[in-house]
Amino acid sequence: MKKFALLVSLIFIVSAGCGGPDITNIVITEQNMANVPFDSVGGGSAGGVTLVSKTASLSSSSLVFSDRDSVRISFSYKNSAGLNDTLFYINTSDRTLYTLRDNSANLNYKSVNVTIPSLRQDTFYYYTIRAKADVPYMVIKDLNVYKK
Image (cartoon, rainbow, N blue to C red; front, top):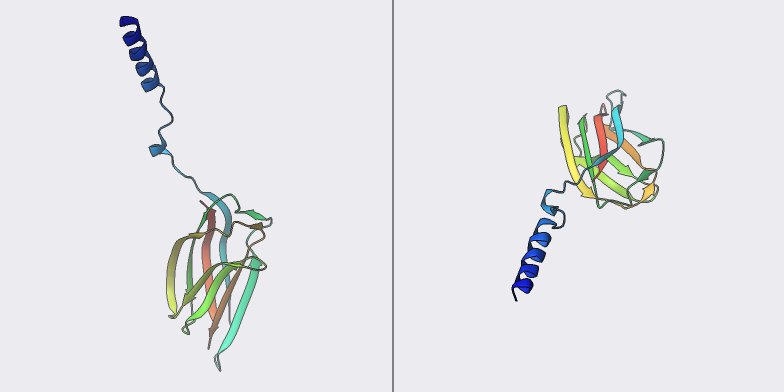
């Protein structure tokens, strides 16, 4: 009986010391998938509401988002629009990942930092910046797209 109690104690000590990984300290890292330091559209003259728009590729290669559940987008912008218009969006050829609408002109930069569900698509992503006003402009800076 003493041998059995000793064996059980030994098993308990060994199993307690060899526990699995501590999952409470796991940190999910994010990976920067795309960066646009600065871009803008605008110009024109007063004399009626004008729409200006520009679409560009977010990166030179396909972005792999199929392996993550969420995407974090951060950037700053300023604009002249005041018509609750779509000012900025990120999309694929057939789906929209993110849309920014704003109903006020911003003379100073306004920051956006949002986490959204991933489309889980490995494809090319594009961004479009637009403005509609008497003298339209839209400026973005420090656009970063991360997969989480």
